[in-house]
Amino acid sequence: MNHHSLIEALVQLVITSISVLIVARLLPGMRVRSFGSAFAFAFVVALLNAVLWFFFAGHAYGVHIGIIGSLILNGILFLVAGRIVDGVAFSGCVTAALASVGVAAVNYGIRYLMQHLNWR
Image (cartoon, rainbow, N blue to C red; front, side, top):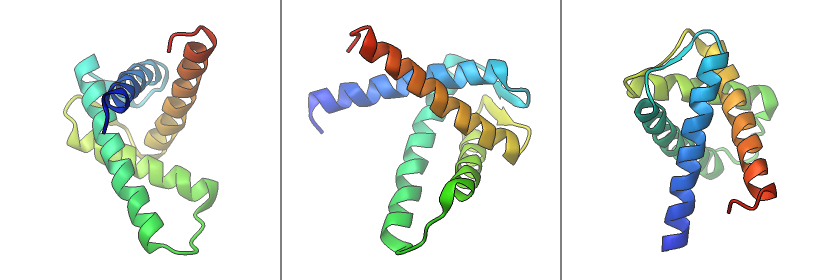
């Protein structure tokens, strides 16, 4: 990994951490104690995501999980990450799935603003 890629990965973790904090403020049933908890959560989600999708890409040939399957998997992934990271909690799988959609949407919005305001 080169220097630029490392910085880009760290920027993405910070953006995701901010997104987690925003979604936690808006979504009942999701609690985040601090920015540090949100950052640790974003890091664990990134690791779990890499492992999960590597597993599916390498072992699930021809399996198409679709939107609902992806939503369920992301909800489970968020639940697991919330159990690993102290300071992040969800009231259930539906809340975790909604949080995953919310975090993705806020991430997209922040990235969109950064690109259009030339912050990168």
